[in-house]
Length: 169
Image (tube, rainbow, N blue to C red):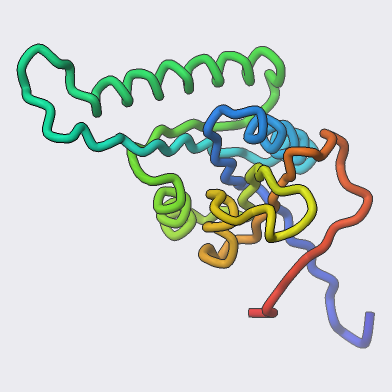
């Protein structure tokens, strides 16, 4: 420390953790939860889902596809919430379902909320070439929030080495 400069610490308190309820997302959720508990942070678990185009199905006896997807997403989120509360009773978290493309939803939430960190899972384990086509790769560089991508092959231990890419903005 030089002269009168003060050392400042930035404490992360608000995380976004998108999930599709896959094993890959679950691994990232475990990381997010452990980090949040260590930092006394709160997590917003976001489940964004695309409602498929019905192809002009008539209004006859078929139930609305959008409504079916909403109901399914809500059931999955309630089940997820119960599991988290049981396993981590001290975790501060919120959940949200969004009927939107996951990439668009994550970008919108990052613009609207003041997240300190986004934590996502990815199928890629060795490099950016493994990310191609994934939601995570489509979010990287498109949000103004630091993002941690947890590879599917990772263990739930905290890493001993971290690579941070920055444009220093």
